Amino acid sequence: MIFAQDNVELEENRHFNSYQINLDRFKQLNEDITTPNTYRTAAGYPGHEYWQVRADYDMKLRIDDNKQRLYGEETVTFYNNSPDALNYLWMELTQNVRALDSDSYKIQSTGDLSAQRGNEKMVIGSTVSSRTLENFYRDFDGGFKIQYVKDEKNKNVPYTINKTMMRIDVPEPIQSGDTYTFKIKWWYNINDHIRDGGRSGYEYFEDDDNYIYTIAQFFPRMCMYNDVYGWQNKQFLGRGEFTLIFGDYDVKITVPEDFVVGATGALQNPDEVLTDEQINRLEKAKKSKEPVLIVTVDEALENLETKTSRQKTWHFKAENVRDYAFAASRRYIWDAMGVQVGDNTVMAMSYYPNEANPLWGQYSTKAVAHTVDFYSKYTFDYPYPVAISAHIDRMGMEYPMVSFNGYRPEEDGTYSERTKRGLIGVIIHEVGHFWFPMIVNSDERQWTWMDEGLNSFMDDLAGRAWDSELFHPRNNQDYIVRYMRGDKSNIMPIMTNSESIYQFGANAYGKPTVALNILRDTIMGRELFDFAFKEYSKTWMFKHPTPSDFFRIMENASGVDLDWFWRGWFLQMTM
Image 1: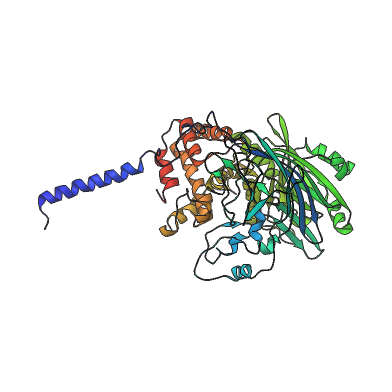
Image 2 (image 1 turned 90 degrees about the vertical axis):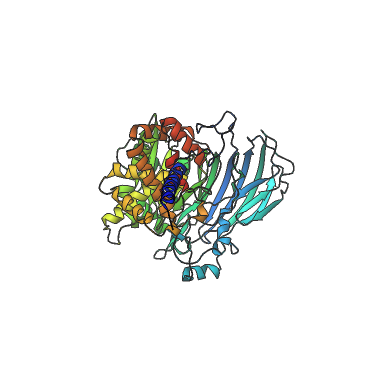
């Protein structure tokens, strides 16, 4: 039995509980984000003692077009800019995700977490797909074959391989401020991207027995060591992407003589690998308002017919980049045009086979140029000399200055509006990654949303600037509303580690995109948001920001208390 007094108490309790819930929603974030220190300030900026390590690479590479293998030698100079003495170094061996004993095969089953990268899928469920069974019983060994690790004096250096990570046991601690130089020789079998999926690999053309190679994660790479995690040596299982450090690259790539190569960095020896006419075309392209063919359709078709066994070496240099990638094929047509960014001319370029025409010739390089121009205005001027879109079927992946993209017309050359939108959209997105995370270098292995979410927000704006109807915002809105109305047991906070996310695409791409659009258009207003977002972007160029840094600088630069927003959209499952 409930008496009148009890009713009053119940009503008071109801109001109190409601007040407590609302109070929690608007509680400040101080206890939920990292504590400011001398390395990272309370305003979201690098502190006065901020530091980061770096590594320079000198590499010699060769593609064996008969065996589909890549052979490499690298000299790595590691700079210990940390305050710590380091007893060992950690390197990523990403290709070991394709080794026969890889853990990546052990975590696959069916169902769909909406994690698509090219043809690669992370799934969970109660039954097993034929694709998964093939992975369990496959005989393709795509892992690294390390031939040696030596120091500058050619003495062997001990090392230990733990799946996709390798520990280099230096003879004595590398003191703060010191450098350490060592050499590695290796090779691996290049994967069939169409059959095996992945973020790089080859595509085989049976009709003329030829290949397109898009090559990445192909060398032992230094892991990041920072003030937040120490060594970021979390294993690569196929989803959480790459956390790397900046450095300079000097790379020589040896391929069959009739191959065309596009790569991270500026070409150092055009007179050795291009004809005089092609060099003249490249110069003309710098001032052209339309793409200029550097390697024409006829020249590409002639390369297919000659198929020489002779070789030549392409030499590239890249400064202050966090990774390296290249594309190579005798099938490639190459076009380019200059984009004026501040005082510099950026060369927007595309490499594609004749099967991709007329779609690629019409749109690829123009989409690259549009992205370079648009992102530069909203963040910071693009600092590198080239921006590349290289074609391989069923792909969408990014590296410094180079992106690998899919989409082709039908065999008769026709294509749908959907295919056109797909091509332009994937190029804008992947070229946009040249900013996030290739320059604003967030930890992809830990927080997918910091590169995919921020970049998807930006590519949404860039797409609308290209064609507001073709890239209408309702596409994202309808998609995310369906997601947020779905099964709550499959909805996770945006602030979830990359390997643990259900519905990967919606959570790491779509939800942050909608959240930031709401923040820009409704809560903060475009003027305040754009200033704060640009401030974050410029501040963390060539550095390693964390979620806390992003949250703090957006508030400090705008003067808007957003703790409730970060909590509702990013730290909790739903608002």
